[in-house]
Amino acid sequence: MLVRKASVMILLLSIFTLSKAQEIILKPEIEKKINLKTEKVKVGEVVEYQTFPAVVTQDPTLSYAVSSPVEGIAERVYVKLGDQVKRGQVLLTVYSPTIASLQANIEMAKVKLQTAKQVLEREENLYKEEVIPFARYQAAKIEYERSLGEYQALKKALSSYGEVKGNSIILRSKVNGFVADIKVINGNPVNVGEELMRVHSHERLWVIAQVPFEITKDLKIGQKVIVISPLNKEIFGTLSLISREIDPKTRRNDIRIVVNNVENSLKPNLFVNVKLPLKSTSGVLVPLKAVFQEKDKYYCFVKSGNKVILREVKIAEKVGDFYKVVSGLKEGEEVITDGLIFLKTKAFGGAEE
Image (tube, rainbow, N blue to C red; front, side, top):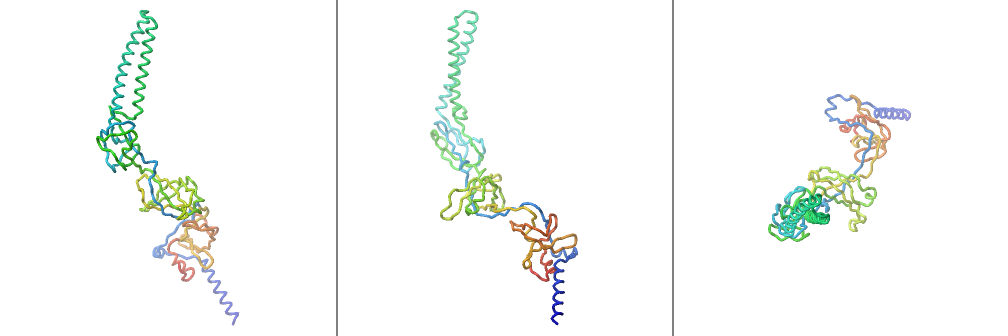
């Protein structure tokens, strides 16, 4: 009797083993009904990320104070607080008595130069005809060169003030941005170097995140980092700074990511997330949802035509949304990712997904 029971058990075990290696034939209507989906096994590299909260701040290097290089009066202010401005746009003009005086001196120097030139040309002709001595010609030449030097020095002094039109200085925006602060109105007196307004640019912003030290030690300055906006848009930035100090309250490191805000997706003080790479691996990769565990073994279903084959696989590690496979699969094979409940029921007799 015991021998008979043992024989039955061996027979059942052999049937169960064969069922695991079985091929399941799928009719098109069944495949559609169970919403069967597949993905191809690939060979490549996959990176695992971890997400951390962060906040957007202004890049202080793109905040510009607008000031006048000369004393004067605000002749006309062309912008208002909050206005969007473009690089090169006129912000205001400043009338300056200093510029007016310099312009008058330039005009006088110009007349003096023209007169000296005429005298030199006349003296040169007389000297060539031997009507006057060389000393007289030389004196005219020296006077011309002195007048030319004075004129050029005055012109250079004028150009040192920047863009000048008439007796006024023209002040333009250095960046595309907006007027963040304005301290002057038409008719106000203007002092040298006094901040008249401030223009911020959000073409480039900083993203500050606090991350554990054990993660920062593997980060490298210059590497790409993914910033996720509240609208779930991914924006690539560059890691530019890893703080040299640990925050005493959070016991974390500050890191700074520089982001080119091309589509104006980010704004200062906005809360975002950053995705930092933790580890990467390369090899034969299969999606996590294609693999399931039965007891101490891992399996997946491989689709070949209208057949689905149960396949045991050896897993090396999990990285992101993939498993790295050591054996059991090869590149290009199609594995089932959706519809596993039905297939597992067929293969294992009611195992849950």
